[in-house]
Image (cartoon, rainbow, N blue to C red; front, side):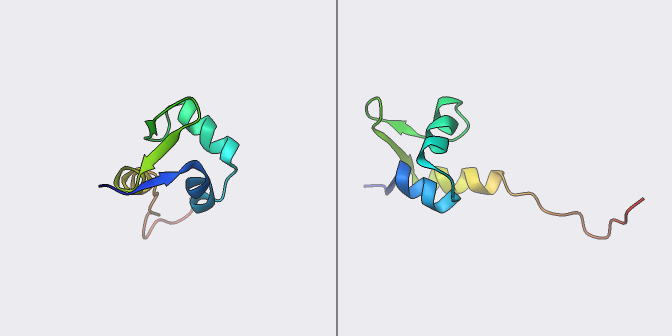
Length: 65
């Protein structure tokens, strides 16, 4: 069985409130599984992939104009 994260766990990892996690879900900004109105879980694999997609790498060797 695949590992799932709770809203509380995701909020802790991202260091945001649980309410903000629910906002991300409502706006479909984060992949999730819905079991009921508040029964939301996140597949670890999907969550990690989503985090990687949000990573911004700085340009190396760029100078200020």
